[in-house]
Length: 241
Image (cartoon, rainbow, N blue to C red):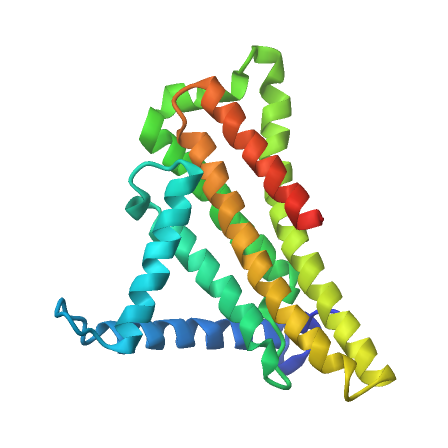
């Protein structure tokens, strides 16, 4: 039984390793790129669009609505990042229905990379929205003595994003592997269905928290920042529950 897909090595030459995390990450990227090309190559604005276009429009509108509900103005500016994060994590978790597939989200290196994307994007959006001076001043709110704590909070929430997603996916895979040994016919099917549901929930939680962090960084006043902080805490409690 493998704890993470990093342990599955397909090819190695010296320090260079080709493990399951890399292979399946590139597989997901290929599926998303190919799917996006095939669906969007024949887009039209007629009254009878294709079923794939209908599905794509529903997905895009839903993501835009979720971003808007968080409080981000002009959600179209953020759908590139947030939508890609959601689709990648969701696809990585949905493919667990196939045998011999190892979700890259079960690797801490993948979840850290995804969290770093959020970590880098948050100040970039904040600086673009408020300007560098005003954004940097937000780290010293409500007073200068909070500066180190705010910086620690910024780092800790990035680590929390990575560890939460990694822990949930790894634990689900380990439970399924144990049940395959105990009862190879009944429980694995049930756990696979629950795993798909959990995977989608984790993708949604990661997406929402990333949106909340960006919303807090682009907020124009301290009261709004506190509002987004409370939303973030509520989302974490819902995930833990």
